Image (cartoon, rainbow, N blue to C red; front, side, top):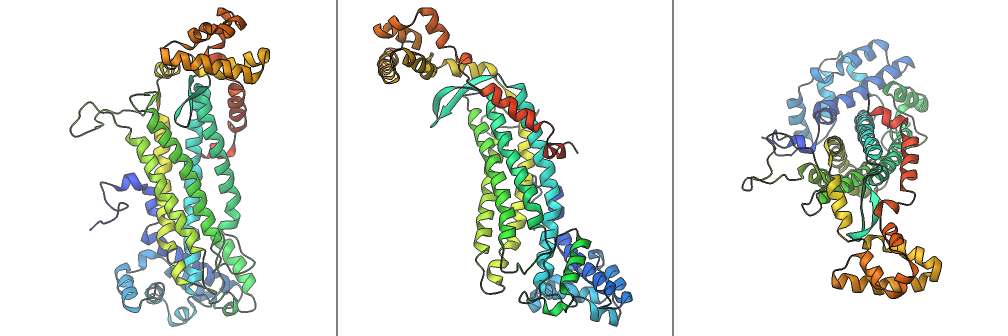
Length: 458
């Protein structure tokens, strides 16, 4: 029976991706544990701690395909231990000598934590690739719509003219910092756990540091200077970064959701034949892609908050906080994967309605340019006086239904300051975009050959 959105055939495509379901599958989770056991045995044999023949047997037996998962699950329920039943299954395929040397010196948390880090490391490559795909779409949209004038809104209402390319370039700039953060966090996060029961490494013997370094190298991870069993900041940092990426993508999804309202109609997500908006209203073309992106973002952020709670540990190890990671981390990763995939598809298929953007710019009948007129007038009569005059003209004009140009001409003092031609020029939206074009160009020039965007083309 499928009881989770990650398992349901009709729902899982909304909440995860096939690649990440494989990374965080039970089989891959246990295989990562076995990868640790194999690397540990191989290292100990190289250092003369256990026999070489035993290590080779262990390495060959550490294959999840040789394990009876149903038997492991039944034994976990019986003895109330997460790892030992798996080790007993492996031992069935080992000689007595090899079985005695399996898991030599390690404790359960060494295995489980390293396994989780290996899963995250595997997922990390997918996140970097998909972040690059999204970035490339934003790079394209920034360039294509550099000069597409639209309304800039603050506090939910019209403020000043901007361009759609400017909006996209801001999103691109933000995502570039997330890519940088992921790269910077990588050597901090992707490290092995080999500290023993209380972090002393006593069970590994006098060559503990050497064993750790070699095991880490075999697994493609880093070694550490001291135990991180009660210090969960590494995992909290990584899930926190996923939450920050999710927040940015959620913001983009929410913005594109709102821009698709019929009253705005400035963009529309790609429409495919057969896509259905409503079971009762055949005319509807719902912004489901944008709303899915905004919705998924929330789930990742909540999982990250659980990881902050898991940082509060007791003594040298704490199962109460630690075990919450088993739920929060996979869910954060699975949903982030779905979020990235859907955001990339949303941006790729996005349609821009330039006519609607122009209509919305013109909706305010020129009042959108009040700041420009105020600054120009302020240079002649003083800023505060200019603000007072324009407030008088604007309030009277809005109340009477006049355009901004007509309201300016109706105000005796403003009419004396400007000619009709000057008023017409000062109320052109495309003439008051400030440094928007140059700032878009700077972001595009910086990012067009960026390494993180190249990941999206692989």
